Length: 400
Image 1 (cartoon, rainbow, N blue to C red):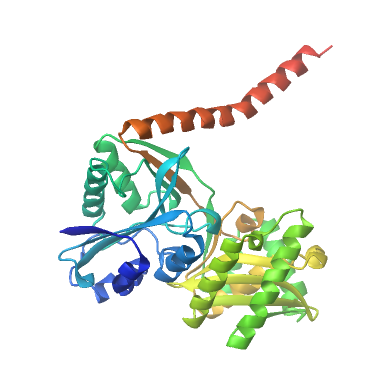
Image 2: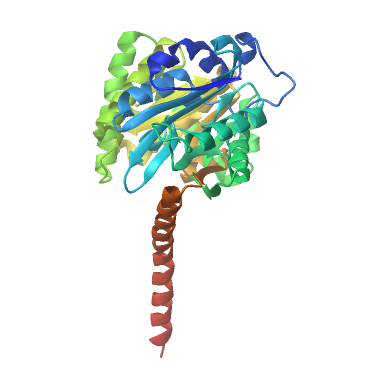
């Protein structure tokens, strides 16, 4: 088996078809070697696709080094066994951290190592390479594997974590922001009854009757290049206006994020996967939703809302429209992605637990940096508890 690190996307380009096949679980159509008897990947996500990762790299590559690991039988794309879509961030204070492409401000979810289904083989090969990399000085040295946006129990990263632990690495798993997914029922009636709570059913029923059945609202989807260009600029402006009305800067204040989302949106629009939706309420633009339909699932990635429309709950109106559309086009689910906003549960979505891993190399430098990090983290976590204890003690002392 041949394992190599690719340092540029020009080097990765021959593996584009394999990358996309593995990220969408269509690997059997392009690979000579397949493992059909092995379990499929835990989840397919647009955040693992070539278009997403390469667009992210274009925007966020400054200060990072590409570290895409490819394992194959003979070096040819057709015999690829796995692709680890990683990069390295390096600083004196935090060390050399291997992360997934898409990490950070882009809030990519359900990241994983792409493979043919043999997670133990993938983990063993990568673990051995990582341990050997630190025995030779050079660009492959690392201090930490810092993985965020992982679905809890995702087999490729769990297998790698366990393999690294067996080789002497300290590992740590922490909770991350939950994701929320609404599995679609065959009909509206079944979805409505599945909401369970009377309050939930009442809320959804009232929104549908008042704003959708009455004809007061309309959902428009960008379907032409001109639509897309007009909708996108209006969507960005509305998102920023809403966030700024709440005293926030908004995602698009970041030049890197603006560049990333524009590039990846254009690519998914060209492939027919982007759903850029405009909500009109009484003829006025009330909200936008930018989503990606991938493997039969609608991923709601970003949104914008007119602040002056907030009393009408345009977010709820948009989401009910998206549910009706999902039923119409026979989608499997709507994924609202990360964040514990209350509306997600109220509209019927189920919690998907997410986590993050930190794996520490068994080297003196990594161990020292990890001790410093754990000390700072402990202080950060402990201060609120210390504050609560102090105020409780003060309250008890001041009782008459």
